[in-house]
Length: 478
Image (cartoon, rainbow, N blue to C red):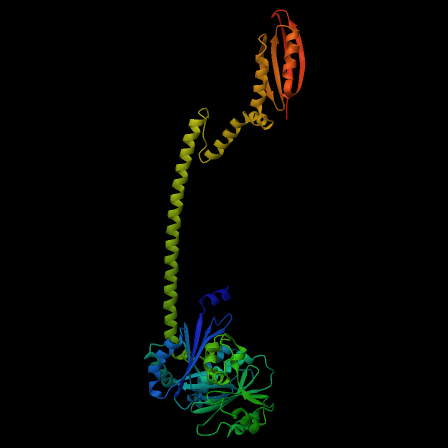
């Protein structure tokens, strides 16, 4: 039941939107909770960073984006990452205390920060992140200027983490690195299984591979298992030879990440450079599939009260709507029942009237049983005349009577007293002036095969009537 409700109220389309100083990237995914399919993708360079909000609205209209849910991202460089040791058994309890556990590690007062954490494991440090509320507010204000209000805001590399879980979650437990090169910072993160074990931001102005070995050495201080692969993604990822330079510098197999190859879409063979540029928007859109969009939603804490009020208003509105619908449905149903009851009563009244006129001798008519009672009387009356149907079913009765009449009509001294028509035969009773006349009548009845068999059952002289009484049985011809 809960899965059905979840499906009914789930959005039909989600757009992941990435805004950087020099480009806009967007990916629209349809039916995200059931069978996610990429519908459209778009990427556009922006020459003037101040003009991004002005170009965003025509960009959506030109590319045909029409989301029910909009998910955006902030650069990972605006966040502070810390690993802190927290004793916990229940992850829900961790959500309540993590902010205060991280307070000593934050560069700003905890009241001015939004704190979140990556999926933890018991008896291991919890990887947490925090950003300033002011940063999120500026991002939302810029979007509000073009009448856009994202339901979720995440970090770029949190979106890549979600994308990896969705598209590469069935890989082995060997650690995999994701090198995100683009924008003002480069980020290296290491994922093992479904856990983010390491993340580091490499300052701008340096080659992506310059300090990659140093970052991996820092990872190796706490983790002995080496990386099995490095996936390179981001705007600068398709640069010629970059993946090869990474592999040569680290000795680890490296390649440009192609996440769209593991996702359903009808866009054909997407170029590798476009896949690298749109990996973050794809991760933002697909974050709803594995439930990561809710975990990494930076608006979850900042607007918790507002969202709660909105949900309360929505629930009340839905409740009022349901009550109104039920009221209208009940009224309509009651009206239809009333109309049908009146029509039924009028029909029964008419049946009683016809019943009384057709069968005036009926002692009483039971109310509500008029039709059934009338059907019984019709069946009883019909039974009296059923013999006609049986006789008619045996052959042409009128033809047999006509033949009998023609043959008797020529004998003036023959009188017919009774004719009985039965199935397959006719009984003929009468009287004649002599036995010879009876013989003549038998001969006539047998002429031309009008009757299959003519049998004289009896013939006797009645002295009182001075006539011969006879009885014939005539079998009708088939």
